[in-house]
Amino acid sequence: MTIKTVPSAPFGDQEPGTSGLRKKVQVFQQPNYAENFIQSIFDVTDDKANGTIVIGGDGRYHNRIVIQQAIRISIANGFRRILVGQGGILSTPAVSHLIRKNKAVGGLILSASHNPGGPDGDFGIKYNISNGGPAPEKVTEAIYARTKTIDRWLTVETIDIDLDRQSEISLAGASVQIVDPVADYAALMETLFDFDAIRTAVNSGFTMAFDAMHAVTGPYATEILENRLGFPPGTVRNGIPLENFGHQHPDPNLVNARELHDLMMGPQAPDIGAASDGDGDRNLIIGKGCFIAPSDSLAMLAANAHLAPGYAAGLKGIARSMPTSAAADHVAEALNIPCFETPTGWKFFGNLLDADMVTICGEESAGTGSNHVREKDGLWAVLLWLNILAIRKVSVESLAQDHWTRFGRNYYVRHDYEAIEPARAEALMAELDGSLGSLPGTKFGPLTVEAADNFSYVDPVDGMVSDNQGIRILFAGGSRIVFRLSGTGTKGATLRVYLERYEPAEGEIIGQTSEMLADLIAAADDCAGIERHIGRTAPDVVT
Image 1 (cartoon, rainbow, N blue to C red):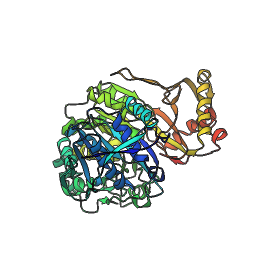
Image 2: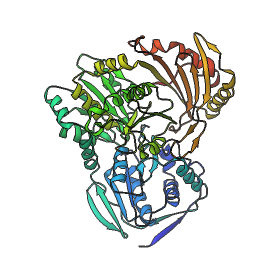
Image 3: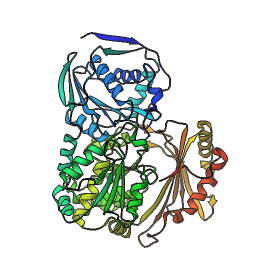
Image 4: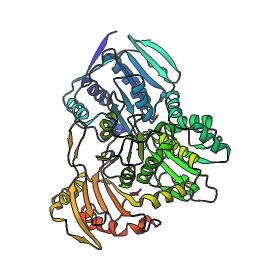
């Protein structure tokens, strides 16, 4: 094997965001761009010599080209076993499982998650470490530092691999294995959930609709839901992964999954509707006439997880991201287990999971998961819902109302203002940050500010401190507004505003979210000057 050194130069814009490096496809198509980033990852990664690496993605445009190059760069950097999903397909949770099962050094996930795909869409590369989870900040900071000084990348001259046929070949001294992307993941799911109980429910007439959004979970959902659990063919809709996601936006929210939403709100609705996103780590849950907000879903799953075999012994703890509603906190209190509040980003859950301090984690952005992998897992959440409904023999709506009657309800919504000029978004946040000291005691309509801060997190496992993670405005009575700039967009800045109001079990738990949050929506503009700073009178997306 002859290692070839390709001269290069830094690009200067390769700082990883919340979930890796995401840019427009045209940016990644620049000569050396993807190669520089992959080489920078390997330059700061230990134990490469004779190690194993996992490579896969969500099937979006440009995946296959980058996978071929990633295989060559991996070999040149000393990896001797390379596992690649057939067709270049591996969901994010499946990558995490393969890393853990095969004791790999890490994995490359080629995805921009829920962002659009196609020649004019987005592309991304994320590195997961040996525990199967996203690289922590100390690793992503080292990667970024290396991207600013890199002057070469390494490769070997070989033929392209046939990605569409399962095989194992020897290539330049390394074993390259094209593996079934679904089999190991599906086998793991069978160890966690009561498939017999779900099959019995299906045979008794329980129905569902699953929208794979022409993204990565299509093959996974077809194998598990239709082939193993017995749902009829056609239960999985839009099940074939496409490079452009069928010209759709693979984000499972009520805007982009409108067809599923309309079905579930109509007279022909099945018992449950579900969807997942581009790389398979997010989920959407809707019952007949009843949308389950992601924060509520986390709490409801945690309260009922013991009904699944994999969680029959109970939970060690729950973790949620700071912007996620406090619904899970009430469950943790009732179960007498801890609930941890972390910054946004699944990487912050990794230490808690590895230390066996928590079992279930979740984010308001429709990501939920457990200690079975180190990523959020869309299909896992759907299967846990199916397991719970099959055992309790209730509808989604009945389960939700029972939950609120027991724990109270956290009315919640997120407003996204997208593609803002970065300077305007940063000015808004800076002004708001500067006003924190004077906000307590201020009245906004009927609301009185009780406290305000810029959230800082101290990791209870390793003591790492993460500052400036989002501005919190806390009101008397338990309501709050959170402001933060998102790290997952590729065009301009995205301002996210999270609004939450708690109603105790004896309060008004069956209300319209928009009406219950009207005072908070008005207060958000008043205290942050949204219209004044960015010229917007309404959000682009409401979830």
